[in-house]
Amino acid sequence: MGQELTAAEAAARLGVKRETLYAYVSRGFVHRHMAMDGRTSLFDSDEVDALRSGRRKSLEGELDTVISTALTNVTDGSLRIRGEDVVSFVRKGASYEEIVALLWETDDVPWTVDASTLAAVRVGQDILASGATPFDRLRLTTSVVSAADPLRFDLDPGSVRRAGGQLIAAMILGLPLQASGSPSSTALSDQLWPRLTTRRATQPRRHALNVAMALLVDHGLAASTLAARVAASVRGDPYSVVTAGLGAVGGPLHGAASGHVHALLSSAASKDPATAVGESYRRLGTNVGFGHKVYTSEDPRYSCLMGVVSNAWATDARLATVHAVRDLINERTDAIPNIDMALGALTWLAGMEANAGEAIFAISRTAGWLAHGVEEYNEAPLRFRPRARYTGPR
Image 1 (cartoon, helix red, strand yellow):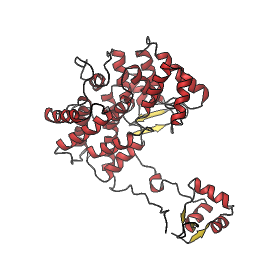
Image 2: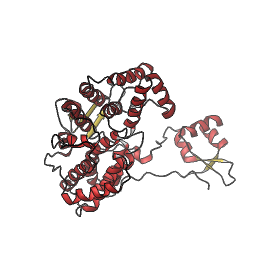
Image 3: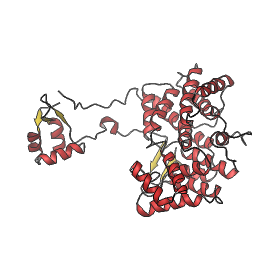
Image 4: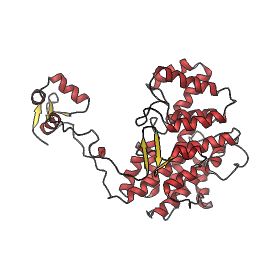
């Protein structure tokens, strides 16, 4: 840390007015801290000089460094896993399990959980309050399966994948059944359907859920995946990696975003699209299900999933509400519809609870978090250590 400068001194060194200096502060270009008198603003001369010479560092500090990965490549309009176009693969009929096999580089994954572990999971689920969300149940399941696995500290890639197969199976099979009868097949999406809705599962509708899960397997270094890699960098076991991912994915701006779309569509059906969109925007300050940090022209996952959703519910009058909301927002903004719009439409049309999309997202992305965990285990440990810039009182 360099010399302490007053606001006047810092502004003079930068060759700007004090008003401009404080504009830099508000934008995060330079930081200020208070002197002992609690009134005087002080600035670090090293930071001021770096800003003056154009060497200003990003607010993210060392985490702004690009993280190399051989897993997933996300570019504008394209999503590739290990070089394969995911959307094209899914359009050709790839299942969730096949996308995971591509990501994990093996199709030898036993998607099973032993009876004693599953029994323990179900005991835990019975303890939860009746109003517990599916996402709440997934977090409990992860803890129970972790505690029941004596080999959880084995970080060998094969062991991590086996643990992942068991955990994902337990996440699905541990959810209470909402519909009577047996699932139509052993496919994970077919096993999940009757645990999220009481509605009848036609083949096109089961396919839509499979497509959603397949498209959500991994998406590069999203916030939850970064959290998972940080856990892996300190050599947390696979269940700790997933727990870190679950902690970050549960926010309304990430895995829970589709729930807001679901609520918007429900409101639009009972009122009208314009009123519903206006109320949603006033409440959230954004058009849910639209816009993306990477995709500017098209979220390819949206068009893929929305296509199969529209086909599965082609004769359902409610589909017109989905299209009306989408078209209204499209006409008024330049933002593109994203995967959350399509996922929210699926959960609403399928008669699921609004928070079901969060569970679908988390179950699917668990495979991605574990793939990144395996990759991170091969890196130097403890590499995520951003520096803090203290701005409190001296």
